[in-house]
Amino acid sequence: MEEKRPLVWLSAEHSGIATHAIGLKEWRLFPVAIGTELRLRDIPGDGFWVGVVDLGSLSENQLAKAGHWLEALRVRHWIAILEPGQIDDPDVYGFINGYCVDYHTLPIQPERLNGILGHLWGMSELQAKASRAKPLSYHDIALEGESPAIRQTRGLLGRFAHTEEPVLIFGENGTGKEAAAKYIHNNSPRKNKPLVVVNCAALPPSLTQNELFGHEKGSFTHAMTAQKGRIESAHGGTLLLVGVDELNPEQQSSILRFLQEGQVERIGGSHTIKVDARLIATSTSPLEQLVASGRFRSDVFYRLGSLHVLLPPLRERREDVLMLANRLLSATPTSAPKRLADSTTICLAEHPWPGNLRELQNRLRQALLLGEGQVIEPVDMGFGQTPANTQSRTQELSLDAFRSQADRQAISVSLALAQNNISAAARLLNISRVSFYRLMDKHQVPHKTSVSHSKSD
Image (tube, rainbow, N blue to C red; front, side, top):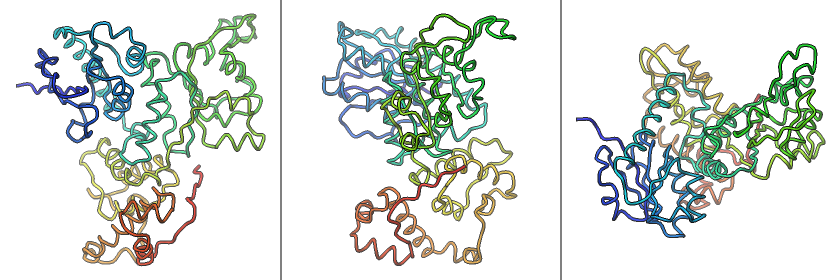
């Protein structure tokens, strides 16, 4: 017997779902009621492909909160169910436009709803197969995890996705800024339109005008045909400026008119072209500091938008490191799967990760190439071993050693989450401030007054 496909059903309450779901016999329903405890573990993690949100059952207050629930559930495609006439409500059609791919008006027509859900499920399967066919990169998992830092960032990106405003994404190298930008595009109303990526660091100053704005036929010696620029190619979709902090002042000036008026003019052209493109930009350096030092134009900075996202470095989401490492390992094609040694997981938790997710990926690739056994040891990942930590396995695996390591990890993670505030870190561990200081003294953990933010190459 063929296994039923999972279908998330979001409504005001569980009662009434059975009536609406009559005829959906091919689906295994996972009802979620707004206002109750959200338990993601009860829903299959690999089945977040389609869902139904019953807008007809929601109050005005619940409708205002429904977007946050959809973001938390992370279902790929949502279908809305409406009461007759509800589509004329601005709040309802605004919600559908921002979060749903289709809607269905009551009474339920099982054949039609089954067809919609089946089509979306099939497309999701094809996308999943295509994704599995290529090696997994850290960009593919950059936003995964359950740490407070990445959950807050993911929620912010989800909310920004449903606007048309420009977004500026900051973050250290290797934190997944481009992945965050693509997340915004893929969850926006423009997701079926082009996403045009411009690598600002690789944009030669002498070719900036031609690359961004294009040219008309005959505008220069080898211009045999007219050609669109990158900005014009993004019409209807999203323009992503990767590393906008790499643009020199002249290049910044050249994009100012587009930022101000949404217009471009091709080289050799005599008329302006209106371009409807949503702008997203990424930057490694804080642009406010570059503006203050005179290295970035203030008028360009302010037109890049007021919606800012800061991607957390890996050292501020240590709870996710082991999960991310295992995700990368499980997706790597090998003759025999490898696993991380207990001592390696400890190294993962304690390492400062100056290179963030890119460093994690590179170290794992090194371990897969150099490691000879089925267990990845710290030395395989380049962490090395000192005489102090290469003693007998008996001592390494002793209960006291694990307790001590657990204490050190708890101190490290809580301090990172509390930004080195002792009182806040103690509250996270549900112990007193005095007890926290005793643990730090016992395990010789130094207290830093501020978090180090080193910039990786």
